[in-house]
Length: 340
Image (cartoon, rainbow, N blue to C red; front, side, top):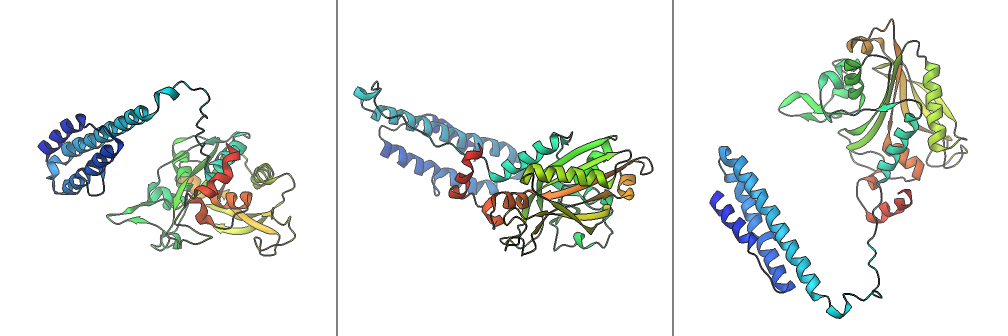
């Protein structure tokens, strides 16, 4: 197979076409679904293991060489087809290429990071494939906690201790292990959960979590930080409320609602008539979590919070189906061109 690839590499450099029809025939011959290159990729699985690396490199070189040669011929033929008497005609209409747009999730993520950066938060990221310690154990999850169940988490079959992260709290643990307080950071990233895909849920989504560790940090500091964020993101008239909740890694814990920005708190189908919409969970970092990361809970305290970027985007742009953010429908994405 190696000799065949080397022969094709030489042939690729000598490909020639005088018309676009001939070029299309060559493209189908080499790059088509039933072409030579596709057949070679199918045969690659039969290459002995000790030769796969070398043959794989050559195969990719062949693919790049063919693409480069075919594209070069296409550009050459297109320029030849342009009438010579029009090449210097300045009255020919200008070709306007359409500009792309930023994805709405990227826009919202940037806005969240920018808002928190104004009050001293820095951004940190971590791996999407995690181990049990950073994802669960260090965060005070009991061995029999439901979040460890296979129904919620994607585990690696050959390594039960390795899994796709279900939240970006694992990055908090990594930062606390290697950073001395004070710590003031946010952690944006993609997470994965074994959910049935619907208008309200997806098996992959994005989170932004925040962490502030220092001496004498209180729940009042948490509330004021979140109130500031809410007003910056949704408008100065937005109100918040905190409801008691439970998370293994915070104590006390709370869920935060904002006044519905669609009905103004009067009540609608989005807020289910209550006038409030939940957007995040938060609480004071449990002393056990601090101890697990080598931070003295008698000297330091802190708070953490976490929110779904899709959730924020759905409220901000008043969309009612999370799947829109993953389908790459150009009609939907064009609505965000003004945000460039």
